Length: 111
Image (cartoon, rainbow, N blue to C red; front, side, top):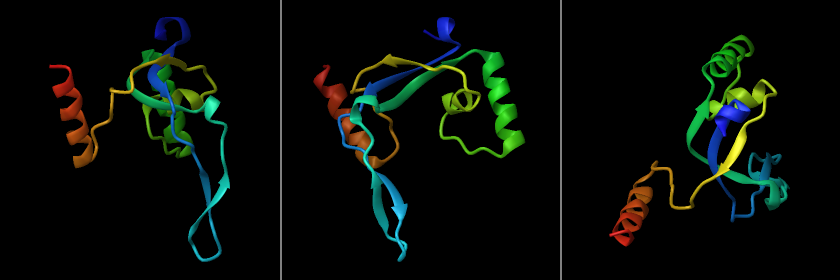
């Protein structure tokens, strides 16, 4: 997929309802909108990007002081396409201790 499009990442369609927030007058989070779940994907790894696009993306991020959360966001900021390649829900991100417990459970279920 990355060969054809220049950039691709594994992702799964979100199951959760996503809420976008704004800060209320007292600083508490309030619901601003609810995006259509049909168009929401949860990004996974790996992310594959042509080297020239990645370099161009980093150059843009430095020049404009952009904050990005993943590498394909750099390509997105360039206005270039990023192919969503459907992955598996069991390809979880290991960030918190709870994630480790979930991963161990997945591994046990696979024998």
